[in-house]
Length: 354
Image 1 (cartoon, rainbow, N blue to C red):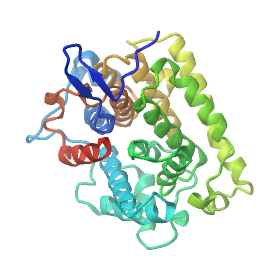
Image 2 (image 1 turned 90 degrees about the horizontal axis):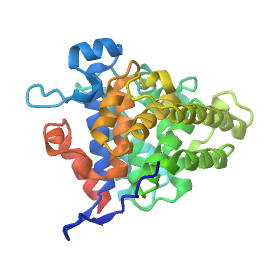
Image 3 (image 1 turned 90 degrees about the vertical axis):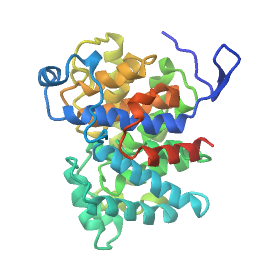
């Protein structure tokens, strides 16, 4: 099956020109998916449907006039605002990015709103970042949790980045907390998928393009961005250290392709590509849900949210992929009007879409 590309500007058939606004669509989609999946996290599919109804009918829960998001959207905003801080000073470089990332992560860690079941790796790494040590000494080199890439989408949205800079920045934001090579590779691959979809890559061609990126990146160690992280992780060869992570990502792409060859809309998506607690599985299952329903972004995030694994992270990634492909029009006003942090998401999206 092929799907027509969604360009940056398109005519609606009535002579009215619309702008895709991929950055806004990505950020809103991530928050929508996160908010939809957040109440379902840690529940089995049977429990989810008993509480919230069939997956095709799931909807956002408004409480006190707000639709609450989890640490996934909170940390996505931390990365996005760190990128905005860094690029305000000039072209993106590791020296410009590390300080704002550290500051924004620590602000999140200390926030009274940091009560949304945050990941232990992020909490542990932020505690170490707070004492001023080099970030490589704070990174949890044994962790490949999905905290590495549920927050990476903003890296794909910053205008003007070339491919190597985007890859390096995606890996760096992951590595401040999650130093396992698979965490870095999965974050890079997630950002690359968002960028390809924002640029109009046909969803039917996406997995092949991602495989090409993984193979080309397999032994590339961005030493000027990552410093001595590989050595601190116990690796004598930085290229071999990264290759281990990329090989796990290539393996999960194989699993994704097998799932897409025999798709089952009614089955728990975690059975196809993994529960999403690790970075490569969150990427694969989030992408699987989008590719099951590429023309229906609301159905895609609903399918992702009704899953037995890390439902909010899986649905957040599905929403990011769907929003990058469809743009801001993917998300009806009644789905976004009460989103927590809506104004911050819209401001960042507007700046990058401009």
